[in-house]
Image (tube, rainbow, N blue to C red; front, side, top):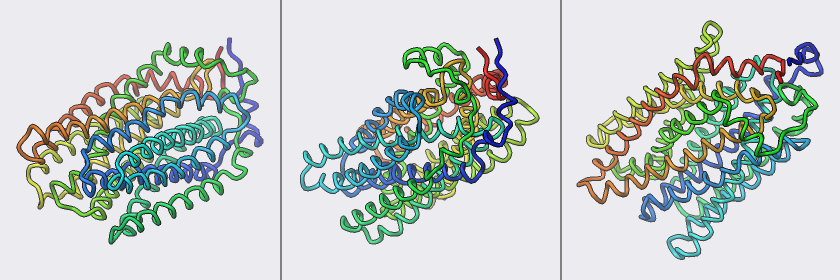
Length: 453
């Protein structure tokens, strides 16, 4: 049976989000990215280099915050069944800001009181996971259900580009403000970042949901199914299942260098905290450029070929693998290697595959017969979060183990970078089916203003 909804959706009242509203959701994403950057980049470097802790400790904390995000499908399902997603967004960012301050304080306590510091860190990173999961999932679900189908891929690119821009800008500013480094200066900078991001989220979401159109399942009077039925439907759908597996593998590859890149810069290249933070900003700058190029080129090319996004995903994965191979050489060459350029190219490949994959994700978000956007984005978000946690932990533990076994730090990092490069090659192979024409048609079947039952 087919129920046509295209005609009612063409009216002005259901025009949905315009570009200004999409940018406002992007500001929320930028706020989330900036706060997460503080916990996963700056604090990670301080624990490993300044406090001489094993890399597995901050990696375990970051992995734990990703493990907490296994609850994303539940939070997404809750926003599906509720009357508003904005309270979930504001609440999530507020929890994340408080948690980032707690994590900063916990890091500074690790030297003087390890037990108290570690206990507080576990609590803080748990709350970081809750804040990111609740706020991020609800923001993407609002985007998917409030944007006309023809704009979904471009809207996803815009918001994620803004998220990366937020990470880049905050990394550069925080890096500059931490010179010279001191505990008091770190607390002051973290507090300022928390206040700015919460205020920005409040302004960005003010009366935002009133502008949303009624697309996908939000356009029907059909009640959202219960949680188990929703997850079962997604897993039994071949296109969604293949995409979930691809997201898992690609995000493991993407995240393995997250927690070791700055320690690598400090241990092998002798960079200071401010210099290594700026190196992270160069990586994010490459991601930003890759997203912009793919967002423009991928959209134009996909109009001519239904599987146009697949080309960008595969090329991005392979470019990332090549850049990681170059980092493996850098680990042996040491100072004198053009590390900034190498890291920028890695970010470029990361951005290319990421934005193409996000475009496919948005296209598939409303593809279910009964499941809504919130729970679907939650399932993919949970897959991504688990992969990020495993990837970051694997990279850090791998470095610790390799440093204990191999002769030099450079040899240890070289081994881990080569493993990560191989993971990206595997992700490129999986992407051939997960983002091909058949998968895109599955998403478009429910994304053209009609609902099939």
